[in-house]
Length: 253
Image (cartoon, rainbow, N blue to C red):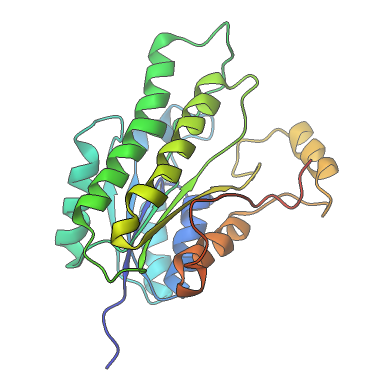
């Protein structure tokens, strides 16, 4: 009899077209069970709005791919939220988390001159502090065999006109890469993935055309493109890749 499926916690999975959902789908196909986080008020104040029944649709899809899934709504700006998320995942699915994949973000366009202090602080609370607290919680609880643990964070190199997002993602990079060393005694790998611009509903037609022109392969990236790399990093075959910041953007200039 095969053993229980390993458990991956994937944050930021609130929309069926999102990168987080694409990663969850691919991990389900590779034999993982999934705990997911989402935060409806974020989508509510973004241009795309709330996608009705998205979380239910995602969990149904994961079940169709053989996975047991649990979704937890969590405001990761709350410093108490990461521990509550891990508690819910472990209690609801009956086992510890083996892979932590962080796709959550706060992302509101603003530059050096017009970013508000409130927006700056919220970006760092969600993108940097919550990521540290999630990694800390993961490291404190991890009990898997050495070599089985995985941390993957999604990042961005966007800075101009998006100061708080880019700056907080830069902090996220350093926090995640530190885990590759500081959690080495657990046999956990930690990597950062930069998927480049993936249109999940936020691009204008002009930006879409410009990104296609700048990409040698002549198309936009998809959530599935990012999911393939994350799936590999979480697999036994991906164990030797550690402490890296990886571009997965089709050669975008």
